[in-house]
Image (cartoon, rainbow, N blue to C red):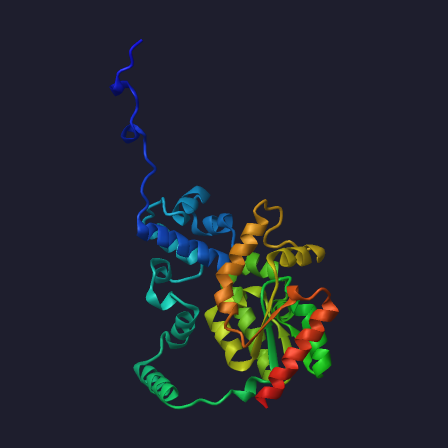
Length: 308
């Protein structure tokens, strides 16, 4: 049998993968980053936005051209402005985002004073803010050692110790899970701010272990940065996972075959905010909790002495 060349499929005849538009690719990456920063699963966001999980997946990977109403629903589910999804320049870095939060809804007179203050700041040498020295706030993802090391550090310094999650539960009269399930994320953030404000007002000398997601709220994170010396407790993803599992708590990644990938994405989404801390300490660099505490104690004492 003679086969004509025209009978052989050419590359041109083979269906090609649809070309993804660069804007849709960037949009999808922003959605994934925001979802990871808030520690939300794709299923949770899809349910909150009232869209199918497949539709959201297509959006995240730049293959779905969502309507403006769907984008608005996704933005609301992620607790952000639509402009943030679309690539507003003031959300391009943590510093821009924190500055925008401070200036948003201010009057023209307030904005003028802020501009004058910034102008003075950048034209004159600034001094260290020593009022923050004796308030230490530990930030980082669950499993970094904030509670264990924080308690020991507070005892060593003779400071009070506050685990902010427990204070939030006391204000709400229910568990963190119940706050989210019954009242939603916005209510949780209000309780979080109230607990943080009270800790700052009551305790001049304190070590505060903060919830891992506090940095996802620009207003609350700004408050923390203004009033506390912040320390980012870091750890390898595998150590985070092992420590949380050892505590018998796998939220929010329980029974997920992609748990480690989800954890890494959450870390990637929040690391730029965690990096705003005054100090960093990697707990994975030390074999035992005792060794980690000794090294952290040395670093903190040196920082306090330098600030005086």
